[in-house]
Amino acid sequence: MHTFKKALAIVAAGAACLSMAACGGSSNDSKSGEGNLTVFWWGNQQRNERTAQINDMFMKENPDIKVTGQFAEFADYWQKLSTNAAGKTMPDIIQMDVSYISQYIDNGQLLDLKPYIDNGSLDVSDVDPNILKAGESDGKIYALTAATNVPVIIYDKTLLDEAGITMPEQPTVDEFEAVAKQVYEKTGYKTNFRYYEGYQLPEYMLRAEGKTLMEKGKLGVDSASDLQPYFEVYEKGIKEGWHMSPETFSEVKIGSVEQDPLVYGTAPERMSWCTFRYSSQFAAYTKLAQNGHELAMATWPSTDVKKSNYIRTSMYWAISATSKNKDQAVKWLNWYTNNVDAAKVMLTDRGLPISTKVLDAIKSDLPDADQKALDFQQNVVTPNSSPANPPVPVGASELNTKIYPTQTEDLCYGKIDAATAAQNVFDQGNAALAKAAK
Image (cartoon, rainbow, N blue to C red; front, side, top):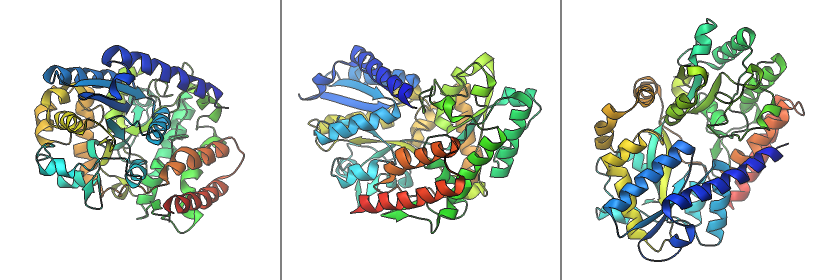
């Protein structure tokens, strides 16, 4: 049923290769030779264009270093990186996600950045020590937070205003469901409860209970009943008609901003009034909003929003342990972290800059949508949040890309109920984490 999505992935990957070859040289140029760097990231078109621009800026300031940019959609990215890692041909500089970082650290594939921090090559003097800890393991620093952001529901405020519906800024699960029902009854627009997109939302909901979804070698919950409330939202939504049909998602690239049902589609029954994303993506969605509609943000729903809320490492930058140009790669990473002009190009696409000096310097330059994202993170979430969970253990990617998506899909197609989906995640998740920990 996902044949169309796979075809789109192939097309996207091909387009990515052609696009970046045009603005940064071929991938073959970066495999060897002093002064050649390959930077690899995932993202939408806006991120691709902005990163390509700052790579050009870096090369102008450092004419002895050639930078080749490569990008892919999120799912395709990890498949390609895994292939590169197996062949020991990883790009020099890698965008890294919290779901995967542990396995690359454990496999010895990432460079320890601490010596470069200690000798001043990588300047983190304006970075909160807690942010540095996000990339730390066994006293070494294997990755540097690229930026921070927060989980948000991005929703069509114009649609809700016209229907006379108010979305709470920090909704409980019950309040979110009530809004979803009202929107469907009054407008015909349905809800996307982060369908097919992994463990982040159930993890967020568990934080309200003081529980952790994953620990090393096992799940952090004692029974499947702890996992069931997340699946019950889908079960209610499908039964009552306000959640989107899974068939709709088989026709789009899940995870793509451009094809997200919030901004893509022509009929209410095939579109969503909301999407579960991160604050760094608000500007991209605002740009794509249909018919000039105004978008707004709320926190993800939880039975205790303050316990669930957290400041998130949106993603990391890491350097391959096999890079032949480690010093140049560190120079690029230092430039990306501390250069104000580069930050004025990226703005909040990956999240808020981790350097307080850089963030202060770009605040007045942020467009309206980025200003809203900054305001939401600083004034809504930060005062009402709890410490972030530690990086997820090896094996987390199995839950993220296979177990949770598959059980959600089977539930929405009516093959299983919420209790069965929760039990399957409990059994399969524990098995996957235990196997990965061996």
